[in-house]
Length: 245
Length: 221
Image (cartoon, rainbow over all chains, first blue to last red; front, side, top):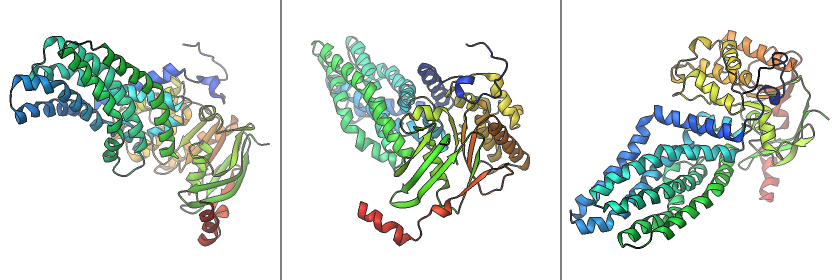
């Protein structure tokens, strides 16, 4: 907080005289807070994603029968695939609403580097979809009678993997902004990039079920996240600039 | 050299030549009114000036520095008001303005409510923006200009949907900005009483005829 400079704040021409350039963290936190507030006021969207996740995952036992060994075998895979599809469903809205009402121009034309703003929007997207999916995963693990000791590894693999899904998805969402039927294009662009996350996320749980160490798989998931963290905002902001030109 | 200066600008949208060899120079206190037929490139020129759209040729300088070299610094000194109001229906009037100003590092609540009061929105500052009329949404967009000071205003049809009193308020805001050394550039079809405003007619920079304009471009591709 800076003290009020009483005189001459009417005639302030340079932004530095009024508020100054916002700190990166300040702008980041404002964007996250605003997106979360919007998500909270439009709760239906987030709830729908979680319902989709739970309902799709419960379809499989009906289709293939309630044989416990089979369910344990396919459980981790089903959870990961349906979580991934649920994230895909939510991606289209990531930038589209802001693009359509002009807010994206305001964000892109602020002094904050666009990459930071993209990172903030992606973080809010993960909190709004990734976290609820992780919270719902234990429920589905029970449907598939996964042993309790596999549950921490499942949740940890999702905690490391779903942020990567949001980050990589942001590139797809940004690339398809100008396009007609962008919602259909996103899966085509993004699904191939999701495969490594799926393999290592699955692998971690499978390894635990086979009483092998899960650490190598989790390390790969972490490495993927660290790679996506700087690269995805950079690529997505380049795509957004293209869409706004 | 002028403070805000553009030289031999050439703008392409898709493969269409919008304007060519356009130059301008503006100093603190200047206002520039862009006119021209629909599709003559008024909005494109404003987007070029904002740094959203890169000109195919030419350069734009602020205090002698190319605006595309340091985009963030250029964005910090400009307000751009496009066709869209950038108003979130789910947020209240004040929340909308608070967010837009926070992006520019302004969190001074007094300044925000002054800006709302200037455009007559203070009484409804708690109202969800989805309940606003089109003119009220436009006024909310305009109040962003006052909430966070910036020396360069780029306004695309700012008076669309405004009632007479709000148009007067807009003119007063623009004149005050100019008096304190700002530069205001606007595209408008409505004649606004701006003192000593410069004019630029985009029709003068349009390609002479379609065939002549397209032939060299197709060779370039």
